[in-house]
Structures are given as C-alpha cells and as structure tokens.
Length: 161
Image (cartoon, rainbow, N blue to C red):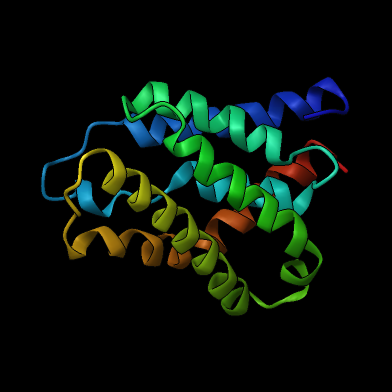
C-alpha cells in the first residue's frame, strides 16, 4: 500500500473493521453464514486503487487474519493473495459492469478463495466441511453492491485517487 498516508490510513481502517466483523461473536446457527468481509473489502480496494493495494497487501492482510482467527498460518494469506492477483488482472473489466454482473465476478473470486481454503483444510485436517460451507461466497456476492457503494462513498469522501 503506497501513496499518501491519509489514504493508506483509510484503507487500513476499513480492513481492520472487516477483520473485526470476522472475529465478532455470533450465535452458533449463524456462524456458517458469516460473509467473507475481509475478502470483499480487499477486492474493493484492489479494484478501485490497484496502484495502491495489491498482492502484497492481500498477503499481509491474510497473515493478520490467520493470526486473528487461529487458522493455519498462511491459509488466508494464500487465498487473499490469489484473489488480489486475479482482481488486479480483471479490475478494468469488473469496474465497467453493472452491479449484478460485478456480483457474478465477485462470486467467482470468492469461490476461488473458498476452494483454496478447502484445499488447505483437506491437506491438514482431512475432513471436508458440509454443504453450508458453500453458502458463504453466495452471501458475499449478494452483499457486494452495498459494500461497493459504501466503500466508494468512503473513498470519495477522503478524495482518494
């Protein structure tokens, strides 16, 4: 994340809020439906400011998320790095689509991260999660328009280019 410090602080703050949402306690029945907040926020910043937020940002964010959630060190880092790379490659295309088409692209990115996470889980624990595991990317795709609009307002408010 390079650039001016006010912009950097805004990006880091939004990622920290997303991490807080990831570790916030939830009822047992709602845990399988927790959206991938950090991934969604990271995707937004990569698409909006690819010259500031990239693969390195995804890796660092993933390591911090691994430590916060107590998962295998590198599990989220791998997924977020790959998603950030793909989002950088596709950012010009995704930005011109209407929200419903953006949501489909975001769904694919979220599914990629989930597949990588499943691969790591399978390699380390050997037990595959249930079908509810696949609901999370779809929930994230449904939330994408609101996240996009909210973070775009934040970016415009702080005049980040």
